[in-house]
Structures are given as C-alpha cells and as structure tokens.
Figure 1: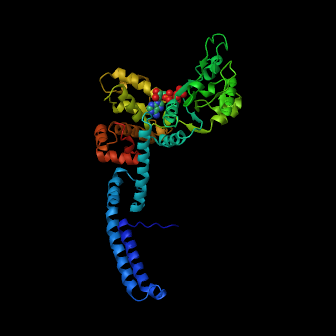
Figure 2: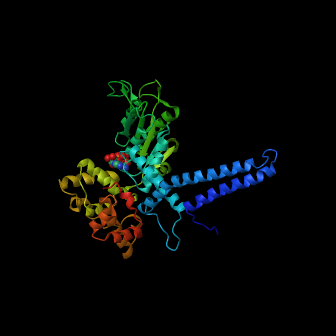
Figure 3: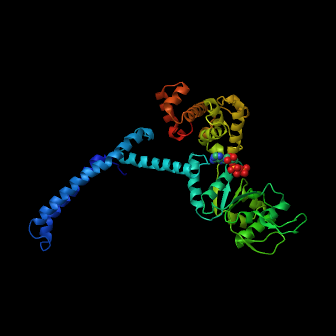
Length: 432
Ligand SMILES: Nc1ncnc2c1ncn2[C@@H]1O[C@H](COP(=O)(O)OP(=O)(O)OP(=O)(O)O)[C@@H](O)[C@H]1O
C-alpha cells in the first residue's frame, strides 16, 4: 500500500536548501581529490563553499518571499472553497490543498472565460462547463457541427456562439428552419432559383447557401428535411458546389454548416427516413445540449438573467425560485424564459412570487436533481431541504449568512446542512 506523508512547504523548502548547501560542501571537499588536475589546492573548496552557502541563503530568502502569497492564498482559499474533508482521514496537507485550490481556480477561471466569451449563453452547471470548451475548440475550425438536444435547449444560441467565435464571424449567420418550410419550397429556399424555374419564379432568387457565403449556415430541424432534399444537401457538401433550381451554373459553396435536431437520427436511419451518409457528413463534431431538468443548477442564473432583461432590478422570492427548481421544464430554457416573462408582467413592480407562476402550481416541492426518484420520507425531506437552501443561496448570491437569515436558521446550522447535502454555495455567486 502506498503511504502518503504530508510535509509543510516551509519545512520542505529549507530541507532542499540545506541539501544544496551540503552538496556544495561535499563537492568542495572531494573535487580537488577526484580531479586534482582541474582543482589543485584548497582554492576551489573556499570558492565552492562560499558559492554554495550564498546560493542557499539567497534562495532561502527568495523562496520564503515567493511562498508567502501561496500560503496566503491557501489560508483564504481553504474555507472559501469549502475543500472537503473525509471523516476518519487526517486533514489535507499543504500540497494536497494546493492541488485542490489550483483545480478549483482552473474551474473558476474556465467559468469566467466562458462568461466573457459567451455573454449571451448562461450556464455554470457541470454539464455547461463541459459544453463551453467544446464550442471554443470547434469554433476555430471550419468543421461541420451537429447540435443535438430537445427543443428549447439553446441549439440556435449555441450555433450563433460558434459563428461569433469563428474565423467567419465577419460573414453572415443565416438560419433555416427546415421544418417550417413546405417540402416543395425547401430546395429553392436553400439553393435559390433561376427566373422561370417553376410557376411563380418571376425573378432569379439567391438561396440560403448563397446568402450565407463567407459565413455560417444554420440548418435547424435537419431531421425534418425530406429525403430528396437530404440527397441534394449531401451532394452540395461533398462537392463543395451547388446549382440554383432551374440553373446549370455551378456555384462554389463557401459556408460552414452547423446543423441541429431534436430528433433521434439513429432511429430515423433505421427507419429509412434519414440518410446515413448525410448523417456521417454532418456528425463530424456532435455536441449534445442536455435538457434543463438535467442542469437545474442553471435555473437561478437563467431566471435572474431573464428577469433582469425584462425589468432591471426585479427580484424573485425564495418560494418562487423553489417552484422553478422543482418543475421539470419540458419546454426547457425557452419555457423558463416565457414563464418569467409572464410572471414579470403579473408581478408588475413587485417581487415575483409563487402566485405569479400559476402554470407551475403543480410543481411539487423539491423532488429534484439526483434525489428525484427517491420515494422514502428521508430522501424527500432532504430533497425539499436542498431546494429551499439552493433557492435561498441563489437569492443571496451564495452569501450563507444572508441565506440563513432568509431561511430563519442560524448561520452555523445552514453551514452544516450545506455540507451534509454537498451544496456548493460558490455556484450561486452570480445568481443574485
Ligand atoms: N444557455 C442559455 N442562456 C440564455 N438563454 C438561453 C440559453 N439557452 C437557451 N436560451 C434562450 O432560450 C430560447 C430558446 O433557445 P434556442 O432557440 O436556441 O433553442 P433551440 O434548442 O434551438 O430550440 P428549437 O429546437 O425549438 O429550435 C431562446 O430565446 C434562447 O435565447
């Protein structure tokens, strides 16, 4: 079994310094004997001793000074970052703590980065923290992206974010909802048509592929595209050229395609309603956007953002937030946005309360997150407790003393409950 020893930085560093000095002495002692031709007499001993001891002293002072900010960081970060302690194990050593703090700082910086890079996309849940780096990575390339996820999860917003961060951001972003255009018109919408190509084609018209030249073409609801159009899209993507309907001239295809669907394309391929070759052509870089019920931690942030846009300074009551957290959001972020718009109108100048969320009246208390399937009383009570605490923390931007006051409990009691339930108050920092 591997044993671990926790050594303080202030102990370890002087030991290393001492080692360096001792090595200098040894070298000074033995080098003239080992290499008398190179180091005759005692002169090198004095030189090496002096050099070794000087280096050790100077670097001791330097390391001590350099470590001061590290130790200060550890001292402040340890309670603020709620570093976990495992019962029965000895407390973490400084190296462990430093490693944890560095990890958490990287996480926080990643979140800040996402906030700066994607100001319109809200999300700090674990799932969203995994999602932003994917967008950053793929945005810089010209690869085709396939966005998968239920309706209202933010696929179009993600497509726009990819475009904004791409080398094509100065070009146009053109979105086509393939489900909203009648099958007979879709081809001419996408590829354009020549004058007289069909009855009603009174003039030449540019299609979306041409309109998006130099930019990004967002093909939304790609699963709703008729199979004949699928073949034409595939051909255009493979050949990197296309023709207008009724035309012969080949036009160069200069778009980056981002496609999206809420449908199960694999099942559609099995049923023969979606072309497998097109699927592989689009599925170069798939990104999944999970439903809102799987990232409930984002609800307070999203709610606050939407309210802020609707009525700056508007606030949500703890009970209202708790109801938002308990609801399952089949319509995802879009439904949340619409719900808050209605609530904000109903609330007028007042705080948004549960009475302004009539559609959510049936949302049971806090059967949320990983305890959603719990049927026993303790599990249900824990879930209820969690959602109330999360709602209060979201209200106070993660400040536990104020959340405790809101909940009518002592700060210490809240602190214990937060620990017991594994809630991270830091995640609510910007929710206020
Ligand atoms: N992470 C987010 N942050 C802020 N707003 C969001 C977020 N995700 C979605 N929205 C908002 O929710 C609404 C629906 O998003 P969007 O249209 O991108 O979803 P979608 O998945 O493309 O939906 P559909 O499949 O029905 O087209 C939009 O108003 C969008 O601005």
